[in-house]
Structures are given as C-alpha cells and as structure tokens.
Image (cartoon, rainbow over all chains, first blue to last red; front, top):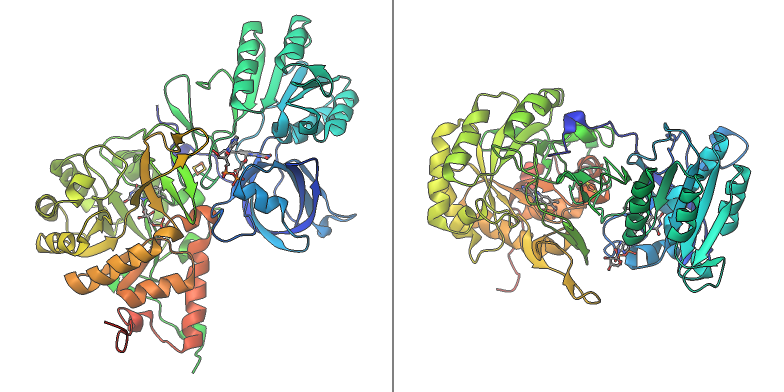
Length: 279
Length: 314
Ligand SMILES: Cc1cc2nc3c(=O)[nH]c(=O)nc-3n(C[C@H](O)[C@H](O)[C@H](O)COP(=O)(O)OP(=O)(O)OC[C@H]3O[C@@H](n4cnc5c(N)ncnc54)[C@H](O)[C@@H]3O)c2cc1C
Ligand SMILES: Cc1cc2nc3c(=O)[nH]c(=O)nc-3n(C[C@H](O)[C@H](O)[C@H](O)COP(=O)(O)O)c2cc1C
Ligand code: FES
C-alpha cells in the first residue's frame, strides 16, 4: 500500500556540488546537450540514474530540473582532473530554456546521482526503445551493455529527423554490441515511417527480444509495455513525473501502481518494471 | 564593531523549547529527517519538524501533486505519512543521535485524534514539542476546520493540553481574515508557541490543455512567492498575541531569516528552499553566524521583534 518508509529506503549516494559549465551544444531546436565538470571524487552513476540541475536563474524556475545522466567521463588524463557529465535536454519551458542558455565558465548546482537505474541482472538479448529526448536515459545503459557484451538493438523514434539527436552515437553503440539501429519518424523524414512499436513488434516476433528498456513519452512507453506483455518479454521503463526535489523529501513525484499503491518516482524509480505501472 | 563569529550566540528559547540555533526544517519538506543525513549535516539544525503524522498511515492524494508557479510551488500531497507508530518505532530512535530538537507535526480528523496523538508522544524524551497542523489545505476534512474557526481551535487546543507536558505549537493558516484572532484563541486554550504560516491556497491552469495542473484542482502555495504574506502575519501575530512565534514561508536567505526575526519571530522554519537545495538549513546557520558577527550582534535574541517603525509612514 504505502511504498514510502524511510527505514526501508535505500540510502542516498547523491552529492550536492557545484558544476562548471563546459559547453552547450545546440542541436536543431529545441534540443541541446549541456556538458558540466564536477570535481573528483564523484560517486559512480548507474545507467538510468538522474541529476537535479539548478538553472542559472533565481525565481523562474525556482526548483531544480531532473535530467538523466547522458554521459559521464573523466575530464582529463588523471582522475584528479574531475569528471565531465553531460545532460541531453529539450527546451519545453523556463527551466530547460535557462539550461540551454547556460554560459560556459559559470557554475551550476547539481545533485546527483539520484534514483534507481536499470536492473541489469536479467539475461537475454535486449531492445532499447527511445522516444525523442527519452534517449538520454538509455545512453549510459547502451554503453554498459556494450561493455557487458550484451547484444541489443536500438529503436529511436520521433516526429521527424530533428528529434533523433545523437542518432549516430546510438547506432554505433548498437552495432558495437552486435545489434542494429532502427530510426523511426512519424513524418518519414528519416528511417522508417511510423511508430517505434512497428520495429519492436517485428523484433519480438522474430524472437530477437527477451527484454526491453524504454524511455519516452508516456503513451509510447505504455504501448511498448503492452507489446512486451503480449510477448512475455521483460520491460523496464524510465518514467518522468514532475519532481519537486528529486531526493524523496516533497512526496510530489508519485507514480500510480497497478496494485493500487503509489510509488515515489525519484526513489523507487525512475526506472520501473513496466508491468507494475498503472499506465 | 565586527566580532568573532564563534562569539555569536545563536541559541534561542521559546516557551521552554531550547534550540541551539533558530533554524529548523518545516513540516513536510524534509521527511522525517533521517533519510537525508547523506545530503546535509543534521547536527547543524536547530530543530527538525516531521512530516504531518496521523494515527494511521495515509496514502495521500493522486498525482499530479505538485506544480511549479513563479517563485514558488503548489502542492496537494494530502498528508501522505507512515503513521505515528511507524515513526516512533522506526525513525525516532535514529534521531536521538542528533542534537537537533525533534518536533512532531500532528494531524487528526477529530479533537480526539489530536489528543490521542499528543498523548502517544508525551512520554517520549526524543520529542521536544508538538506542532498541531490545523492549517493543511490539502485534506477534505479534519485539520483545517480547526484552524479557521476560533471556537473550534480553542476546543481543540483545550482537548490536547491535558494530554501533554510538552510545548504545544499551533500552526496558523494564512487563509483567514484574522490570524491574530485564531492565535489568541489558541493562546487562551493553552498553546505555548505559534508557527506561521502554512501554505496559501492557490491554483494553476495549463492554458493549452485547459486543465488544472493539480489533480485536486487547488493546492497550497509555498516558496519565495508567499514570503511577504508570511512576514505580515508573523509581524501581526507576534505583536497581537504575545506568544513566541516560529516563522515559516519562503525563507531561503540570511536576509529572509533576519526579516522574520525583526518582525518578531524567535525561530524560523525552512521549507520549499530545501527542495531546491538540501543543505539550505546548514548554509543559513553558518551564514547567519557570519552576518551577525559582521554586524557586531552578540546574540540573535537581541534582534527578535526589533523592526524599527519610528519615522515610517503611518
Ligand atoms: C527522472 C527524470 C529524468 C528526466 N530526464 C530528462 C532528460 O534527460 N532530458 C530532458 O530533456 N528532460 C528530462 N526530463 C524532463 C525534464 O525534467 C522536464 O522537461 C523539465 O523539468 C521541464 O522544465 P521546464 O521548466 O523547461 O518546463 P515546465 O515549465 O516545467 O514544463 C513546460 C510544460 O511541459 C510540461 N512538462 C513538464 N515536464 C514534462 C515532461 N517530462 N514531459 C512532457 N511534458 C512535460 C509541463 O506540464 C508544462 O506544460 C526528466 C524528468 C525526470 C523526472
Ligand atoms: C510539499 C509540502 C508538504 C507539506 N507538508 C506539510 C505537513 O505535512 N504539515 C504541515 O503542517 N505543513 C506542511 N507543509 C507546509 C510547510 O511546512 C510550510 O508551512 C510552507 O510550505 C511554507 O513554507 P515554505 O515557503 O518555506 O515552504 C508542506 C509544504 C510543502 C511544500
Ligand atoms: S521529487 Fe520530491 S519526493 Fe520525489
């Protein structure tokens, strides 16, 4: 019933730090990739975990914004030079607009890593299904699967070509794992015309998909989860809810579960077993 | 005239409640405290007010429960909490390791429920005071009905008073014409301290979808947007009631803390700012110490109610 019990809650590994803005890469509007530098030592980040990023404004937005950790790398040759952490975002309101306009050389506040990421314990061939900027949540996962020699396909959907930022990177990672890359656009401007569910259901029928990892708009994830269920494939979905704090204090981020309960997206999630969510 | 920061005395006392410094986390904005020890040093907190606790656990309202608005946020959490027994059993023992005073925020559907909650914690040495939440706008019944009517409030406080020897804090609602009238009712019935304010009832609509941003349509506004309202109420209540006051509402800077102290608050609770930055209380305690040292103020107590009104327009 109640999923929130502080005594039962996993302890937080997140740290509160200043982060130097290294660069902002602008893709076709409204997409951007923000690169931040943090001092070492920094806690390790599990694929699917996220960061709460403070926009360089004071009142609008007031609260931080949640972003998946897109990449995390050493900033230089030695560990002591710190780490570079990227977020990949889409401008949809004041918070994302302020981050897209961040000035290199300035410092932002960053709380990370937060939440529980993807569970990699199961076996089997995987398919990663991303919708637009939801691809950000699957980026470190794709790297990790390559490192673990797990073969996967990457299905990347959007309205048009410009929604598929970093497509080359995801294609390379999928191929490095031995799998394939399937871009899908609603307007047919790139790859297959249609929705991500088309290639996914082919892969499921071909028996090339034992488990699915997905992040994107809710209706897309809902469709992906029901396909998975039809075919008996495991599915993990990275959810996005409005988040006040990202660390379990505001109780604002609840996700309705099929068992009738509510789960805190920022602590129990953001990755959920797709079958547990009341879509 | 600057003095050494270590010589600044931040300790305050409100009706027997002693705090090492005047800064506390506000109810519902820092869980039960313990969970976030990794993000801030709890030992720097003057006190910690728990999430509203009820006799039985509550699941709270359906999502979406929060929406950001300019300079603040609306919430309709609906008092999701683990219940008083789980708190006493699982959380309270861990809090004993910290010097921060623990204040339990209590919520009930009836006078009797408040009295039972207060009685349940009366014998527990780990709890320094109780705060009666009679001002939560996010539950359909209980709570707020007591906070909006002086007769009901006084009956409630009178019912709780005999059950506890701990200081009783009554948390006032801003959503009334005269908070002073309610403060006086609470005082006459035996309250020791007033805290003000709870959230301000508000609403937001998404103009594109034409739907309210909260599932409950209306919710409670908090954050910097409500600070001037809170300051006015703290000022009125401190002068008009004569009980020690804990200020709450939009505090995020040392200036905010000092404004509330000058308006008459002996202590200050920090809420929404903790969502933006989990170590805000710790930062404010240090910032306040530095500021008072720089201004040559030896004790924060010297400033309580010290707003200069002479010469200002009538
Ligand atoms: C765990 C987690 C990880 C996330 N990772 C990423 C990421 O990697 N990249 C990224 O771009 N975004 C990500 N998001 C979403 C991101 O946090 C929001 O886009 C951001 O908070 C919007 O802030 P804003 O001030 O720009 O817009 P707001 O003013 O907050 O929102 C503008 C409008 O968009 C709506 N809205 C808000 N959030 C969303 C959403 N998630 N989806 C659709 N509509 C929304 C609002 O209701 C409002 O109408 C993530 C969210 C969560 C919870
Ligand atoms: C998410 C959230 C939950 C809250 N829960 C409670 C609660 O359980 N009991 C209570 O008395 N006040 C509750 N409050 C009110 C705060 O304690 C505080 O009075 C109010 O937010 C104003 O302070 P602020 O502007 O610093 O946040 C809550 C506020 C927020 C934002
Ligand atoms: S975002 Fe605040 S509790 Fe999850």
